Image (cartoon, rainbow, N blue to C red; front, side, top):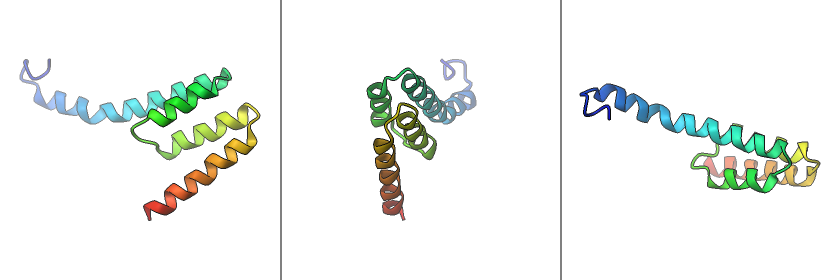
Length: 88
């Protein structure tokens, strides 16, 4: 649509911003579903996310803690440590 108008700069800006917007939407939906007690849905969003940044990981820890699943929250925290260690 922007390319037809000759507005290539706008089109490339949209493509640059889109992944960040999708990350924020994933985080928001994961938190909203978890606050409603739908941990399976929150986990599904987490697993399907293209980018799992620290905010999404923390959201999952919060989600399990908020719903009284402390052991699972600790397990997710340990997974974060493993992932970060492998990245080094």
